[in-house]
Image (cartoon, rainbow, N blue to C red; front, top):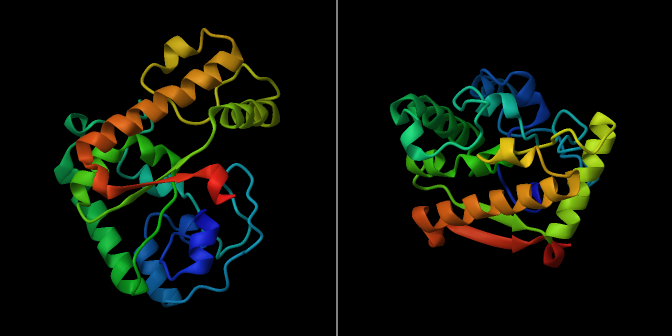
Length: 205
C-alpha cells in the first residue's frame, strides 16, 4: 500500500536516503531538492525494507528520536507533549520543502496514536486490516527466517507482551494481533473515527 500510494499520487515521504541521515532529513531534502529519483516500483519488500535509495522507508530510527523503544505502547499521559514540538517542526519543515503532503508507514506508530494525534491534529491514519490467520502465518514465517525458530518474539509488542511469551508460538501470534487491533480500535474511538480510514488487505490485493 505504501509503495502504491507513493507511485500513484504526489506525496513527500522518508526514503532510505533520508533514513541514512535520520537526524536531519529536512536538511537533506533541502540539498536534494523537491524531487527524488524514481521510486522503486517492484512492490516487494523484505520485512518492510524496500531496496533503493529513493524507495520509501519505515525509518524506525527517525521516530525513536521522540519515542521510547520499550514499552512500545505509549498512551497520551505517558509522554511529554512539549517534547514532541520539535517533531512537529521537523514535519512542517519537510512538508514545506517537499511542497507536498507527507505519507508515512511505520508499524510501531500504531502504538503511538494518542500522542501523534495530539501533536498532529491535521493527521489522518490509514489502518490496514488483514485476516488474522494470514497475519499470524506471516509472523511465524518471519520468526523462522529471522531467528531460526518460532518461539522468539517478532515485531510489535502490546502491553501484555510478557504474558504472551509464555504461550505456544501459534497462540502468541494470534493474541499479539488481537491485542494490537484492540489498542488501535480503542485509540481510534478516543481520537475520532473521522480521522481514520480502514482498508481491507484482501480487498486492496
